[in-house]
Image (cartoon, helix red, strand yellow):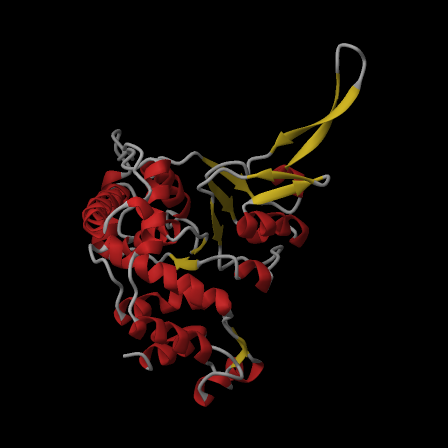
Length: 335
């Protein structure tokens, strides 16, 4: 896990060789996470894709599906300093960002000193983010987009890399505050976690109730991850894939989209969705050992990238149409 040279200084041949090395590291990271988080193969891959793309993820699932375990394991395997914040209704923005305190010097002079909050980390887990007030939720907005916070007019840069992995419980909505669209759009992906199949659940029952529980170990370092993120941005992407991304995101809008889809939407995906797909399809290809993405990658990532960025109108909900139905129709236009 040594520091890697900047990818922009490499020749094409060196870049291909380095990409092969990184693909091997990412496979090892995925396997290491899979030894601790059982059965959630798609969620693990999508979480890795999000971090490799330099973005943030919203993990959605009912209690007990290893959302917290996934984030903790991801931090260990990727060699990232991580912190967890339990979001509650009484949580304040200063509990996340930090606050200024009054200090007095030995001469009696007083001055303010900024004490950094838990947001100053590489991997921040915002647990049950929708249980905090909108004021507290908004404390993450600037950090997630601009990678710094402002307190009393002073700017404080966050560590790099910096990623927010927030969890949300889709049930028990009493006392919660739905995330505003502006904040949802900051998440590169929505990663859904589903119930395990019978064989996986049997494995969970056996392997997590013994003395020796599976432990995660570092596979990459923070510098390895930054170099891999830079590599993702250098991977080639064909015109046909760019056209597919453009077609998909523009179709997912009330006015620009296909008539049979557009009339179901109250609002749709903005340009940030296309940017997310441009990075995510490259990251998916690299994780799978390919050095250029395909239209299949676009189709595979359409749901996690678009799901939290679309909203159905009243007519669609009354007819029983779901977001998944709309995305399935959108994806069918690509294949």
